[in-house]
Structure formats: C-alpha cells, structure tokens
Image (cartoon, rainbow over all chains, first blue to last red; front, side, top):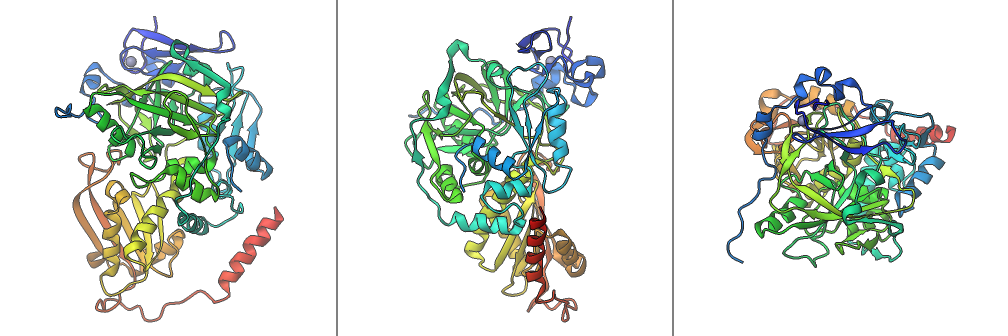
Length: 77
Length: 475
Ligand SMILES: [Zn+2]
C-alpha cells in the first residue's frame, strides 16, 4: 500500500499515467494534495526518505491559514 | 521587431544562437528543473532551453529559461543581444511613454485548433507537467498570464487584468491559485466573493515574450496590460476573444484554459519555492474549476525555474519592476537618474539621484517606499549620487564604503507593510525598512571630506561602447 510521503495518509489516488505505457504514474494524496511522479527521486516519493522540514501533520493542515481570507458576504445589494 | 507568439520568439532565439535543444532523453524530474536551474548559474548570456525527448511522454515540447538572461531579455524587446542592462531599462522606460497603444483584435487564433470541455477536460493530457523544487507541493503553472475582470465593472477594458500568479495543478480539471492580496486578481476575487459569485478566469500559457513581461509588471489597477504591451512592442498587441468567458486573451497563446474561481472556497496549496529563494508554506488558497481548454496543434509548454536567485524570474521581473518605480519617483523628483529594483522583485532598491539640498536623498528613499509597488516590496533602499550607475554593483559598493557614515546615513523605520512572502518579515506582512544614504552630502549638510573625487576619463564612455561592438562582432 502506498502512503503519502509528506503526511503519511494512506489514501492516495492516481491523477495521470505516462503516455508511454508503464513508465510512470502521477499520484496524489487525498488529504494534503501532495502530488508526485513515481519516477521522482526517493527524497520526494518515499516517506522514509522525505525531508522532515517538508512533512505535514493533520494538525498542520487544520491550522493552515487562508490566503486571502474569505470576505464577509455583502448584505446590501 | 515584435513577436506575435512564443514560437516566433523561439525561432528568433535559435537564429541568434540563444536556444539550446537538448536532444538526449531526460527524466521529467529532476532533469527539467535542474537544467533550468543550472542555466541561471552559467553567466549572463544563458540560452533558452528546449526539451522534446522526455521519458514517458510521446508528445512533449517544453521551453524553459526563455527570458533567462540579459541577452534574451534584450532580444524579447527587439534590442541588440548585447545591450547593457541600464540601456534595456531606459528603452523600456522610453517606450512606456507611448502607452496606451490600442490592441488589434484578430479572429483566427491558432489555439482554436483543439478543444476539451466539460467532463473531457484533462490538464495532464494537454500539458507535460512536472515539478521544480524538492519541497514543492506538486506541479505548477508558473509562467501563465491570468486574465480576469472586475465583477462590478466587467466592460471596462482597462480594469481587465492580465497578471502572473502561481497555479498548482491539484486535479485533472482543478488548479489552486495564489492571489497576493494587493494584486488585481485578488481585488476581483474579493468583489465576486462578497456577492457569493464565482469569478470567471482565463489562464493563457506560452505567450509572446513582451506579454509575459507585462503580465509580471506592477501596473495601475485600471491600466490595460494589452495597451502597455503595444507600447513596449511598438506595435499593437494581437488579442482574441476567449470562447467560454468572452475575455480578451492573447491571440498567439499556445494554450487557453478557462473556468471559474469557485466562490468562498479554499484548499491546501503549496509549499512552492518562491522568488524570495525560500519556500512559502502550505496555505489554504482559492481553487479554479477548469471548464474548457483550447490549444494549438503540438502545443509548446513554457515553464520557468525559480528558487535561490538568480533565476529566470529575476530577469523576467527585474527591468519591469525598475520602470514603474523610476516613473513614479521622477514624477515628483526629476533629479532621479536611474532605479535598480532588480533584487528579489524590489525588496532592495538602488536609486541614483542628484540632490536639491541636504537630506534630499533620504526623502527620495522614503518616497520609493510609498509608491504602489514600494508599499508591498521596497524594504531597503540604497541612494547613490547621480554619477553612480545603480546597476553597476562595484560602483554602488564603492559609494557605500566611501560615503556612508552609519550613525547619520542609515535610517530605520519600524512596522511598515511588505508582501507576506518576504521571509524576514515579522509578523508576516510587516517589516522595518531601511534607507542607506550613500550620496555625497550637499549644503546644509556639511559632513565628511568629499572635495576631491577622482572621475572617469572623458574618453572612457566612448571606449566602452567601442569595446562592446568589437566583442559582439567577434561572435
Ligand atoms: Zn499527504
């Protein structure tokens, strides 16, 4: 089973597959949206080789700020 | 010489020996980004890079580093390849005076050749997408011109914006967009979201080289980028009507993506290795639903490497950041000779100016910080005399070393605004700012001993031009 290298989530989808069959897939984490190609270096594709500085936890994701903030709905036309 | 599309410019670069075709098979990662990163490390004449043999793809054509040297920047403006940077900025500023030049609408846009729409939309099937830096959250469109309109004034051609914003591909028909709050697309989005409406948007990829320059230029809210492109090209900008949004988009684009920014929605985006040479962290950003893609036969995918400066983006936004500051400063202070705002999008600016009276240089520095671009960027200003070329860093360092008395010539102003991406800001968006007055004091300022400067020989300037010509003729 493939885990997300960045947030360790266990649900990963496939966004694309190589036009030349069987060369690579593009995968995406369903939680943090991290996207990677299976032929990229281990430092981008494997949880155990992924740099700590770029790892995200569920708490990090929940705390991510909105940019720009959603403005209040205008009440008068 | 004005180029109507990217292909025309690439052909011109090749004729000048400024397009390097990489014919060996390369990996999409890390090779494409690593090659473009390396182009920024090999000197000021680096060529554009062309890849069409990328592992796993059958039909990829990728152009990178198209604006990534002073040589290519000069050629984009139709100038001789070895034009000095200061002259490129002056030409840019002089052509600006022709603004506005009305665009020319054409019906036969080549991107009408192919269409995907609705459920058939698949960005991955049209674009050979790839990652740039290790810590990037995914694959990015980072050299697009993004077109949007003011929802409260959709028929105002000038308020229609054409800007460059980073776009992360987060699905087959979805993109995340970073609108910096001070930028025009953020104003458009705010108005739409206050009404609870989606904001229609067009993303055009692979544009003519001047349109790309203009899209990255800080311009007034109601000034048309197409009318500025016409001034800089010295020929009307060719535009066409996008089929879904009805927006005005470049006639010559390789790919036109249309859809909407979904109202009042944010999703995780990033990080991305930014122009500051640092990653911006993961944040919740607006998302685009793509409803239609129009593209030329055999489209060229243009992308840009950015990371630790200097990279292509620094050439791309260097001169076009200098010119608005130069114009705005000169409007009130005609003594200003030249402005170098090429370091990290103008976070640091070097200004050369004549002085009216003692203390004048510090006033020029403060004005730079209160221009529209300065509000979000200019955090350090070095002011030098009128006989210093601010683009010649050894001259600037000489002025700093010989003319600055730190106690009196360094001014620090606390708690001023800056873009959130500025890594040194604390908290994000707020910073202190500094002026270094490296000018020679004039009355009533009588500090120092500056009465006998050494000057360049009167014949030296003519000799510099002669030497440049001889070197160019050598080929
Ligand atoms: Zn994840």
